[in-house]
Image: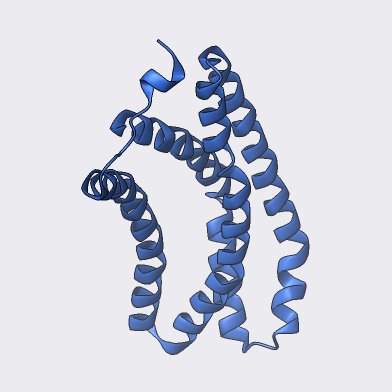
Amino acid sequence: MGVEEDMYHAETWKEKLVLFLQILWPIMVTQLSLHAMNLVDTMMSGRVGTDDLAGVAIGSSIWLPVFTGINGILLAVTPIVAYLIGKGKKDEIGESVTQSLYVSGLLAISVVILGACLLKPILNIMNLDANVYHISYHYLIGLAFGIVPLFASNVLRYFLMHKVIHDLQ
């Protein structure tokens, strides 16, 4: 069976819209749930006090650009898998995903090491109140414990996202 025979081509606008919504749904649910976690953190800390809210907000504003940047790198697993499927090299997908997991681990460890070296200087530059500094610092330290599994699970999610999209076609 050739590559062209495996692909589904939407011909009408209705078919294209249905295919788009099928692809959009799992991506949208994932993104909303990831950002809902930040929303819940903010809501919960706001109920405790203003210092807690400020500390979590500062921690989140430091963490989210790092997370987004690393995610952009890890997202490359999706087109790599698509390329291998398109070339008929499905037997190489496992190796590519494994290599991506290694990269995610190295990136996660690098983020933790850089965070250990740069976190205090970055927070010191901000001239925060002692309590807000303490909350931001410990919020980011708490996040650091989940960085390795978070990045690894993202690689697997991006691999499975391609599978879901491919299966929908």
